[in-house]
Image (cartoon, rainbow, N blue to C red; front, top):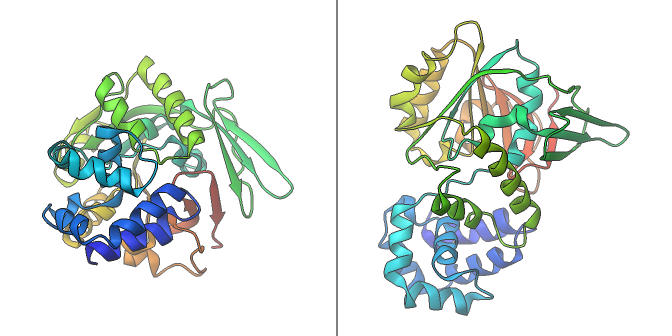
Length: 322
């Protein structure tokens, strides 16, 4: 996919209905030859819309329109490019745990959580959040009922049968190429900048999760997920159910790296819990029997078996039959 196509796709599929500003900015970038030339001078992994917009906001604040974005990018080009090269799109959205929690609750307890692409590790704290699942005729609450963070999720189908304290975590750890520290002011500012404009509810969730995490920060080790996976998994207590999990991470690996990960995780004891775009794992997509939603969504799968379509940033899920 060319850079202009990537930005058009981001505008019309990813940002539409979620961030009007990012939709407008991405469409403008797609038609700006000078901006595209600047982006094409960067490594392919550094041309992403999320990364460009976050870096520009990190350097110059949130632009009101494309003219302001352009002024920041070209007026402070060295700073913007340096930020893009040094940083990654390490979105750490705790709302994604609403899809993970019922699956974790269905497994033998306690669990040992190993997250690859963990960012600051906020999704490793799933049992510390409260959950509310709303269907057409039923509302169910679970998780930590006294938590400062309540994650609400609309369910288009059967509401999961979760209960307070259903998930017990005996051990947790994460892997990331560049772990972010919930106690580091600059890392926190980057995490907040990754939240899309207009999405004040997401920002409030992030701030609440960060406050909880600071009390007992999760362990996230630096390294390549394929290189560190087995060694870290071996540190999990043998009497806990190992769960290797990830959300919106494997898309950043080339095909051979994904295939290697699937092979490696398949050799481990326990379970593999994935939440990725359908195209990331063709062998999982091949098992889908229902069409994808019109809005951008992930496929939640356990050990390669699709369970639900889920919202990119949490808040909605559609269980899959079978």
